[in-house]
Length: 456
Length: 131
Image 1 (cartoon, rainbow over the protein chains, first blue to last red):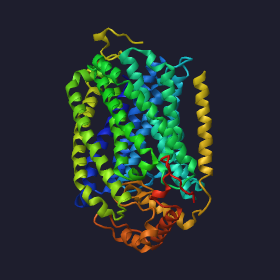
Image 2 (tube, one colour; image 1 turned 30 degrees about the vertical axis):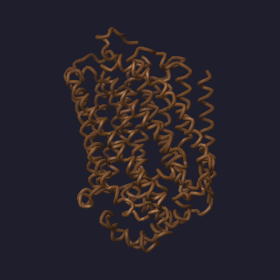
Image 3 (tube, each protein chain N blue to C red; image 1 turned 90 degrees about the vertical axis):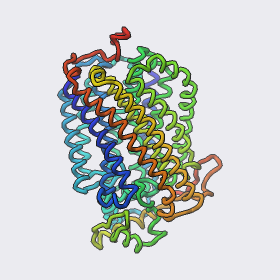
Image 4 (tube, rainbow over the protein chains, first blue to last red; image 1 turned 45 degrees about the vertical axis):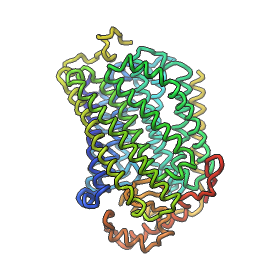
């Protein structure tokens, strides 16, 4: 592993640790006005959200840039990768520095001043150049994970630019257009990083199982095109209740309902998944991928229900939306990324002890389930009280939900401890003498020596 | 080859969909200078960190889509200026406060945050009149 990859992984894991700690502190400020007086929620929330987003984006870019070298068989382009990492890191310092100085840009999820978008954009262009330098050496018929990585990297750029179009006056002179430019780009951007992360999960499964067919068949591509359609057209579900053009709502509803096909596919493949777990369950990376599969099922089922406007009428703007976001970012994205990092750092992981990683994952999974259920219950009661009972006073609406929110915060401490233990173990692995002394190009197939599998 | 054709088709549809989404978002009630300035105050004070508009934003405080119409401008001014147990007081001058109220009045005129029961179609979707 090259030095730049090690620093890239370190930055990603540092963002994860910051997001976990600030998430718990922000939950404390959310629950207690006394705590909020000392720990200002309006400052903690953007810090937590940005750290979580940058963990996911930095982690996804780290594994894609590392695995693409093996997938394309191309020489490593360390200079471009280093340039990306330097500009990206400086941008992150500016983001958190601006929050510390109480300077905001006030856009949901990207709450920093808009000028910082320029260095972030510059960094992503460097990453794109690095990726495309290897990409042009691909096979004429590349496997699905290459399509997914490429669309993820390119669509992140497109949606990032689109997200900043609000700075052109035409986009914000009409409130519906202002809503559309914000939520169309936010929705599609989530799809973009999902492409990078799900592509990585597929790549890992191919490497672990040795079955290249997983990333080749027409069925796999058909499911991918369905997911890509969601990235492009499903953003309208954010705006169901806003009086935008009706076709936006109907199209998002139709595209969402097509995703029942994916859910049925997961249910039908359940038995095969159990058999697969029996074969590969001894591998650290696989255990994280299996955990992500569980969350894909739970979260997809929730998303499908929320995508029915008649149900969304009760769930929109409630903590059910937060449960969906947390299930996706922690249960799916974080589990896959931690699995990918455990795979990448496997020589170091063996040195620091897999037991801590396993304990951390189990604690995080159990805590996340309580955390998720508490948010679902909070959102369901809030939705019922506000929509069916017509309670509009915010204090009266939220008062009976306090015990559930306390359960959510306590479970959050469990999520922080579990994922924190995994992140610290992976950081130790990344800097362990065992990994530092290992050859630059170690076999990527985890346990290859033990099972006799060879690199492709 | 079929994969490339499908991908190109999707990209063309995405481009066309983006164009129609932005063009068809209506021309009524264009933001004036006061509203644009109020939007800047809203953003620089990071109100979205705690409040929602159309159910989108933070969860600390209430949704403010229709706060202007339902509660009136004076109540908004008082809350912003003096804060509450959870909400900090904001150090805005009179002009900034007027602009923020103008922005919230503009948002209020764009539609209602709560979808009425009669707008739910039997297929499960909503039938809302664009403004």
